[in-house]
Image 1: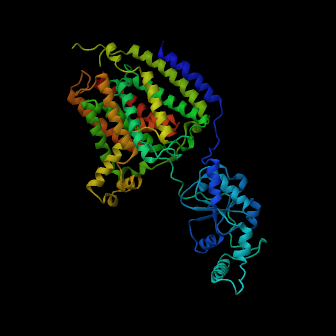
Image 2: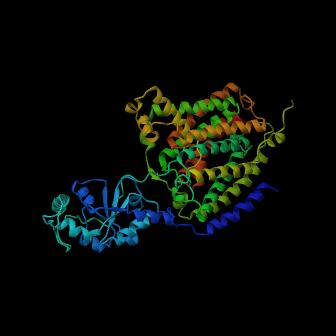
Image 3: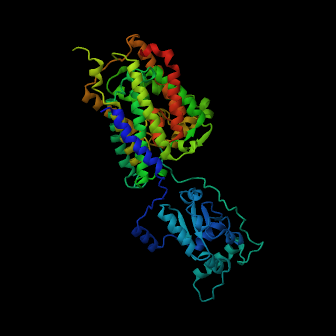
Length: 207
Length: 196
Length: 178
């Protein structure tokens, strides 16, 4: 039989099918459930608030705080140089470059840890690394970093060191109350976060 | 599942090993189809041998349909497959220069290597010429750098540029290619050459 | 041995449609395995860059091309997917030539020109192609064929430029071929 006819009979129906069926836009899960469970069990997704405060005070450029609360809550208060990616929109394509990259350390935070942990789970499922959760969230932050309480004299010296650090950090970070006020050092960041400078190593190719 | 390397299913070194075997397949099919013969390759421009058109479009459509169907079944993640970026000006200028090289040399790099491998001396010289051209480019790069980097448009897809879905474009391409195949058979009958 | 007629000769080549399907399958598996398409001219660039580096270790300091090459290729420019693939192509073509009985040193040329003329044009054509492939970041295998398989606009643009130009110039070089 004429090869062209064979080809036509094979290709045209396939072409019709592929044209008619909508494309598969699901983002594939990279980790299996047991793998994900194992990672959460170690608690490696958490980043300690002291560590984050330290990076903020030192102006470490590799830190990127991500506020996963609603834009309204973000506008009311946000941590220094944080950007806002509301949890509801976290799977949107416009944030992929920020969430999936090797250069910066992204730290999700919310009021507690629930929303931030959810954000971590979702992005980890997609295979992204370099994302963490601020342990304790903003509630712990306010209570213990910004409003650090002087430990009583019987506490070990590490507690005093921690207190000293937190006191100076809170001063540097503009310690204040939750109530929206003009004392906030956090700049009113635009809701559209800037694109990361270095995207994750993309597939290379070409001739 | 796929691409296997990007998803960590095979290692980088396995990838390099497989590259060798993929290359063997590539070279074997090219030579078996007659692409090691410059006169067969040039035939598409004069009508007497349309093998380039038939193989090229059949291959592109086969691979395209394969990828689209695999994506549909979730077997491959198309976001992880390399789409070569468009630098409009350099692509066009480079393409024009290559076209001139094609009609004069009768080969392209892939087919030239195949021809050289089976002993065609014109293909060997063509391959030498490739190196000459690339050395020239390397040493005069400063003259071309601006052109080379002009108008970057990123990894744009044809379907996006035309405003249609990938699948619809594939269908259109299939229909166009089938038309071209019929025209090709007609041309080969009209412009025959007995021996080459 | 009598010269084979065209019919007999064509029997020793694969049917082009079959060849196309096979090539498409090779390309498909290539994309599935490594997430990239086939290529050829890039390997030439790697070898050229590696040779310049070998001769002049500090080439990256005074040549912008070499600086960018070093950035893209790193310290082992030959341990590169394309270079290894091209080595495979050489082997694959050789095997095919052996299987079909086409291994022979010869110059293939139209009876209307001399073999010297053919060789000269092969060299010139190669130089033009090598240069053009660098500018366009690909050749017919890498940019055009592999590009079309992933629906890349660059692939189509490059392919149309190559074939359009070749068609346009075909008349002027017809003596080389017919």
